[in-house]
Length: 389
Ligand SMILES: [Zn+2]
Image 1 (cartoon, helix red, strand yellow):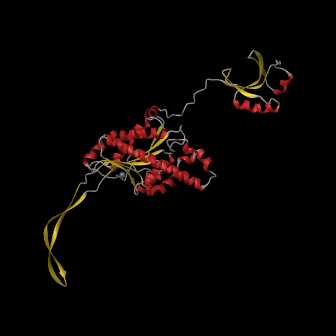
Image 2: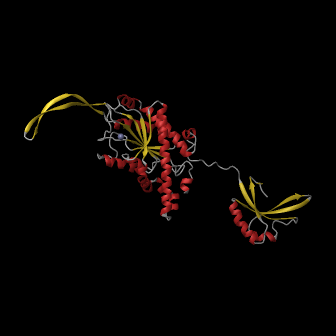
Image 3: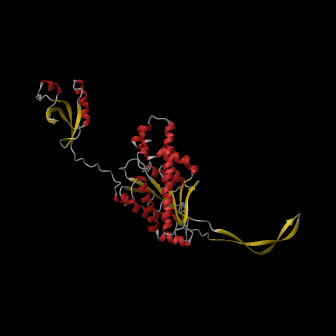
């Protein structure tokens, strides 16, 4: 699986010189406000945090951010919540996302209570007779279910098949020439192994990022409710052909958390940003400093200052032949003679040509050998100086 093996951090980066594409998905929007607090909605909070996160991530060199929405409207412009979900995933796939980050708020239903408040009398009919009956009376009421903290989701194992399908159909890798050359004519079995590998890798990467987002939240004192796999309900997580996470940034129905979610969006975004920087460093096999300094930009090939050239050594002889001797005339190329003293005796080396690449010289050598110079070989010069025998 060359396309995978090439990137030790995983298969997320098909090519190093492409920007790393982050899809930010603020949940809900428009006709779908999501969970409600006392004065704000999940859709508003998710958008606020999403936009702040995007601004931070855009500062990282070679990172490109796309949002599924930037206004209080359902993505895709419609009013159908299900269609909007599909649109989010399609958009992420179309943009060639390398990671999908969905932002939401949690909410809990109030806790129902029943309190006995006495009896009242009622009459019922039993066999045509009116019967008096005492009936207990209850007061029904609810109290707020105060939960707090953050949760981060990755898709559930039961959705692995769906994720696999999304990958096969949408992965940006499909446009990678290397992938094409590998799989255009190859077997279905190989294909399956490949996508299973990609999927396992993406699962691993999603969990890595999700865990670190929770770590960062815990560092600033949020209640860490752990990374979870959700088997149902988060369709976007397995419909996107990339590692994907969904962050529940807090409980909007908890008054204290609602205040926090509205007033500390920059801090929440920064936690996610910090986790992302760590994640990207891991994927690229770089330090976070390198990631932020932009060493992730296309590697610049250093110009080689050394000037290499190649000649073919035809023979070594004690005889001093003129370089235009008839024995060299068939060789097509300039012959030079070098004088060498070995153990008090003088020897002459005869060299042919001046080749720019070792390959050119080797090709020519084949012909030279056929012409009878059985011991001929290629010699290398660096900046005009011979560097081998
Ligand atoms: Zn939600």
